[in-house]
Length: 485
Image (tube, rainbow, N blue to C red):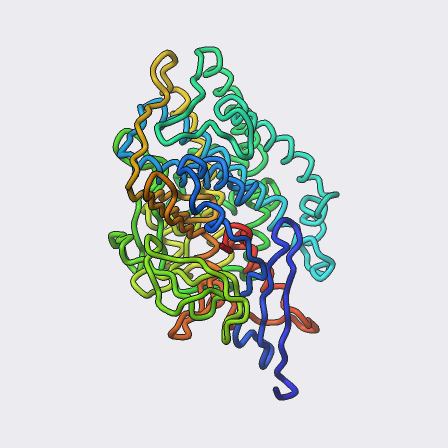
């Protein structure tokens, strides 16, 4: 390397995501190339082979303590698909509420506890916005931390009523929820959601959820932010920082988005399934493949997950990650809240992407927008519960079957592919959201979404390691323990 070129290793990342390494090649004051490494192997797919298929409801949620409900739902949907089993109306509503509570809590934690504290670092001490941001969002000592933990705990009380406990509930089943709801419990659910909604409207947004959801363009968002003081709400504080640091210029990947769709209810989904590649496209899940070229995995051919294998090869030449490289029809796609909102057609998300693509600011805005949309729908789902009517259906498990469970976790599209032979699990493959976003290069040398997003990242004056790169990584809200196999 010349004097102006060097390599920087970023990681491990604190605040949840420790097991992640990002190698940055720096040239001329910018990131010339990035290589994302998941330096951990776990082997959940091997653990599941040979087990009773129903054991997935116990084992798969242990993949992660943050999105265990998402893993439970994907496993339950895969079993339901294998059994050709449908949920009763109450089962759909109850499982949607449990999944939504986890996803909203995840977005909420990410914004307050993982993402915003980076702007309270001393590196920004000279910025005019620093003092109020540091006072509010500094890790551990900021005023936001103690407020949001109490609000988050109030929301997660819903898990106690509907799922028994969190994480690793056993209440979610292929045919619905094992926990029925009495009339007085429905009222308690409404009160819990009402308390969380008040926090959002008074503190996070400083406005009604309906007003936030009705914002229909980047200009409307800017006008809304300018209508009150910059630090009158936490969303306005973020938008102030985003404008000052040009966060809409950071972290643009390929602008190709995918969503499996989420929250089925009465024959439709709250968020539609599909692909956005300059325009809406139908999602063909048969076009998914996992490339192994840069992964410490045996095999060279890219396979659909239903035929995939996960066999470690720690000495494989040319590999640099335990993460596989999922592709849709051979293309890199980004998943997550921004992808969901763009695919679903929310006008704010689509105009933001049309203006500046997928980037740090737009990913965070989409995550907060999604909180507002989902909490409003959760209140409707609670009102629609019918105590006394069935919450779960049952069916026999076939000895030979295939099943797939597709769900949207907070971080993006999560898929479980199951095959059963002789009444036991013959094969089980999992493709997690961060596997899509943090994949290594494929056989064509094409970088994954984060690797693309980091290219061109500038260094501030005097920086040895670009702080902007950490903002980009965190904007995806990574989860490496789900990512590796």
